[in-house]
Amino acid sequence: MLQLDPKLPKQESFTAGQVLLIDKPLEWTSFDVVKKVRNAIKIKKVGHAGTLDPLATGLLILCTGKKTKTIESLMAEEKEYTGIITIGQTTPTYDLESEVSEAKDISHITLKDIDEVRAGFMGQIEQIPPMHSAIKVGGKRLYEHARKGETVEVKSRKVTISEFEITNVDSPNLHFRVVCSKGTYIRSLANDFGTKLGVGAHLSALRRTRIGDFSVDNAYKLDDLITLIKDLP
Figure (spheres, one colour):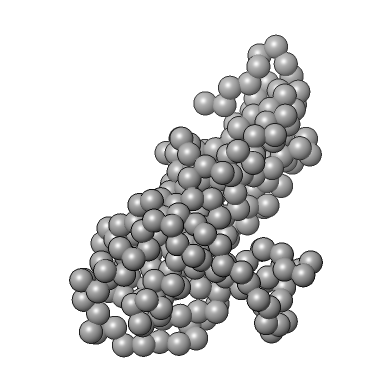
């Protein structure tokens, strides 16, 4: 339950600081969620600890008031995701935000092939962020360059994959669970997985289940949280 200081009015309690766990709905941007909560609690100082793409669901941590000072430390925590990598099909955005641009036959791919590729992504790896991401290069976000058809150099970064398992194979879909460090792009992981497999791939579903010690199992549905906030005395 949402615990506010009973000695403080609702708005002042949020200003003093709250950490809110939200199960982000599909097709909402992380900022959409921040804006919705900000309007409900009627204070401007609300931020989130790690963006989720619109087509991803799951744990989004919001901090209000003085708790916004903890955002950077929360963002540094390891993350856990589940989702689906669809092999044999690539898209420009590495996910379903764009149409399939190339398709390849996957009939020769075996479970052994899949497991060998999976194992190759364990530990510290080099990863290049997707061109359709919010990282800034030359003062503009990468997706702005991409939408204009501009080619820019994107430097690789070191990230750590501490756990990566394929939980089910329903060809062409590979269901997975991954635990990774800050800065890991699961879209890039899906794309790189397909490249290593030789048939291409894209991310077709993603859910963040954990950030550090915070679990989505303890998160509010957004509508439930908004109703709760409005009903607080």
